Image 1 (cartoon, one colour):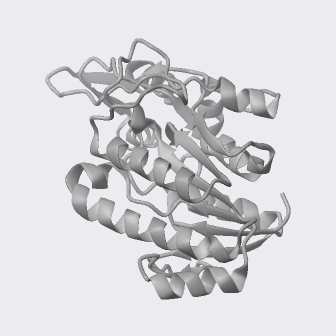
Image 2: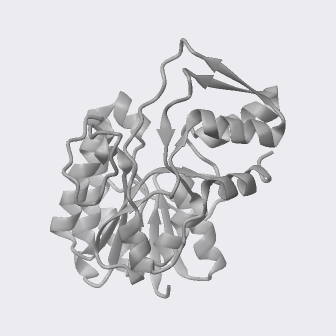
Length: 289
């Protein structure tokens, strides 16, 4: 991909890994985050600042805008109104500011939580009727429609659980299990570990973003090919580290979301770009210290 890219949330998990890739490819970039980190390249900017946001976008003139600077599912669970208000204000400012860059493509990360509330025994597609029952899903489904109505040249990725190298700011099952093995020699699983999760590697996410110019505008499910129970993931990781697994059956398990059918994305790319879960996890675990 050629051109100039803006990445918001550049100190977050996806944003920071994408920033590393862009820097290595020598693509002109502007990295934005509302926080500051000493020794890390980027612009400290709160996107709720309408005037400054518009000024920076106008000055840089991006051809690709990747918006990864939003609140997490955990934030929406605990502080729905506060999280929604900040994310809405930031997104509205971005959309209004892009008016001066009519050819710019917007990439936005939605979530598999838009499918919360649907039966988990059926695959879900981009056209599936939504009735989210999770705060995060409610907000993301609203933002999707706002983007599609306001900026047609957009790619919206409904993202499943991401794993891989990088600094995850929020709880991450794979990383949590790996660290527990290294520090304690054991993995603790809540309940029976029956909750199922659709994982995707961070490398696959970056590939899809950087090749998004090949996609027609619209919504795409971005999840891996595998639907793995927490117990299965725990066994894979404990076997890798020769650790043991303990099940805390009195603890409540997390929510299982429906499986995202990803054939639309794979058909658009016309190749197999999603790393199998077992292969991706084993490669990742060799890097965890």
